[in-house]
Length: 104
Figure 1 (tube, rainbow, N blue to C red):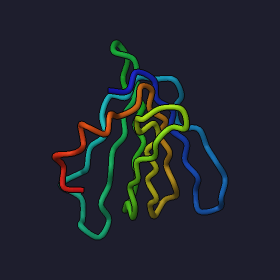
Figure 2: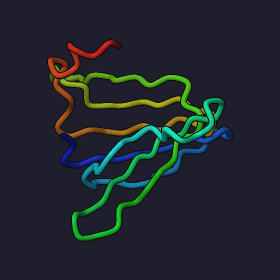
Figure 3: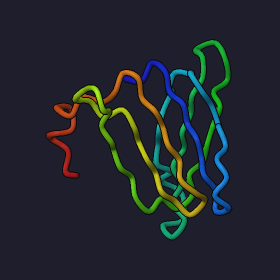
Figure 4: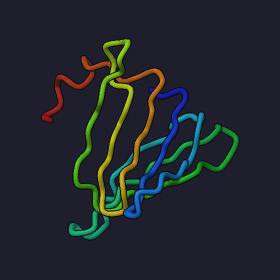
């Protein structure tokens, strides 16, 4: 789905930190074993022959897909969470038609 992805995180102090850039997205998964009051989302990116880089989002509040300015796909995933805001740039983006059967 995402050939190249970049993730940035803005912490409580407002600073922006690049976590990974221009790496294939391996997975985004909800930790089903985490405490319901402190849910975690794992984001992994990396090359096939290497160990993926992992970023953990703690207690997500809002997850939003945003579209790109020059196409009809969702090219940005914004996750507002207890540990800051994580932004993932997707290339190519997500086709909105793939989401029509989801209860969002």
